Image (cartoon, rainbow, N blue to C red; front, side):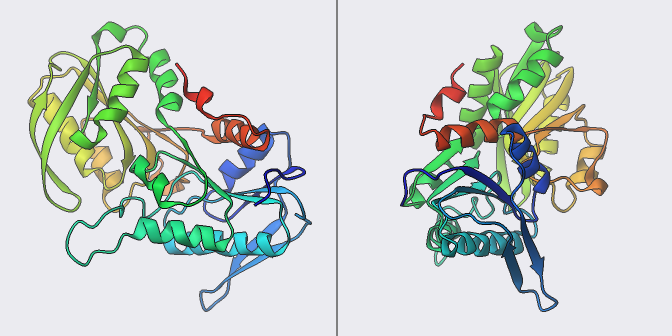
Length: 320
């Protein structure tokens, strides 16, 4: 593996070209010339239309819906760059699909996140740059360097500005026990107290709120999570915070807006005042509603890419 390429080149697949363009613009570069198309039989075809020999190539591709198509695009693009003698290949994956399949929940389950890590490495990735993996331990599934960016530092400034007049009345809430560390990090940066929603999950994508640990009565609540998928957990938590906890208002934020299935309808009908997400996953027009605010991730990814290219540490980006 080369330690350093001669220059930076940013390429994109079809999952999130807006973010790739934003990254290139933030670095003062043009987006690399490539074409990724799908044949009528479903096969992916990649054409790289400029030399990448000796370059530090960064391939921007969220493996979001349709997950398998976007993952295959990424794998084939990296294979093309490897065969074109790129100096170093970094898979820039703002949202990594299959990250929730990180363990065997029952007998004979696959560990799909590990399989995806092996596929990325075999396809030619020299390193991976991602944001808010469902479990940070997924970094250990790779035998190559993984730079793990955090969504909280991008979300906190928005709420600090928006809640400056009611800051002393604001409380941060984790929607479940698994998100406590993330919510605690948010609360520390926001300088606000923390509460937790204790829930019991009956089956996949269905949850029942049981109890609220902490005092949210008459408070302005911000729920913090890593992703919003079908929005069942989030909407149930918000409802309980209002009805059981007696909160004055509830907003929410998350790094990844998966928003699958009934998510949009649930958010429309929920008690949530606002939902803030990052654009790690492209938001289709039909899913854009007044309650949803989208913040850009291109600046932070551009800064990380510049640091990777210059061989300087990324950790200072997340210091308070």
